[in-house]
Image (cartoon, rainbow, N blue to C red; front, side, top):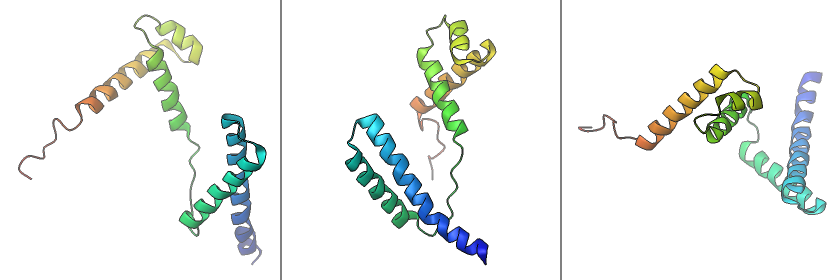
Length: 123
């Protein structure tokens, strides 16, 4: 039965940890004073507990999110002639820069075209 009590004790630990991380971000990013940042951190942790309490939540490592952010930066900094510079700056191969630029460009085109080619007529 020890496992069950350990599991229950992790809930409050998770909320305390969430509140602390939020407070640090608020203080560092927004310059919020420590007391206010801690209060907002607790408020967010309480909101998450009320909203998701009792559920098993999986937090992915966020690798694909981080990669997509990097890819977006590469695309945004791309000027048509700086493939090599971007490869060096971001620590990727020249071929990878070409691949990223092509993929993000295709995503942009698809996003702009939206539902132009949806087969929704007649439904």
